[in-house]
Length: 105
Image (cartoon, rainbow, N blue to C red; front, side, top):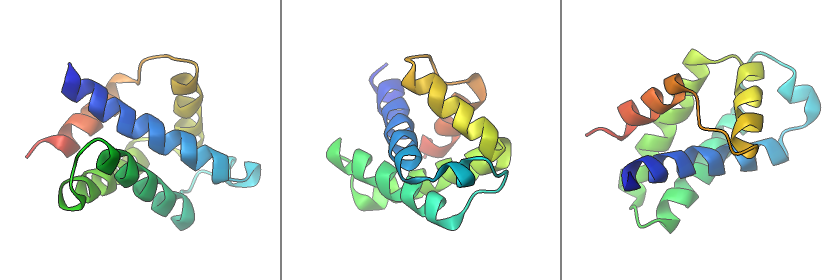
């Protein structure tokens, strides 16, 4: 349960911060701009570091997360997931699978 919370909090923190910096015109696109991907990884990494992970542990996980998200979801779907998480909903099953795959050794 603790690991599930940790993984979920990483993605939620990264999504919240990413949406704050992304202009509306970017959110309407299907592609993932580099600055958004970089911001996601940076914010995810900071969240992991604040929870006791090392940079060597967390940065590959965060990179894996955004790569998996980009492969699985359009940018518009990514935005919809962000809104769901902000509303307190559970992450979609596929997103949880992406997180689990990225965290496994």
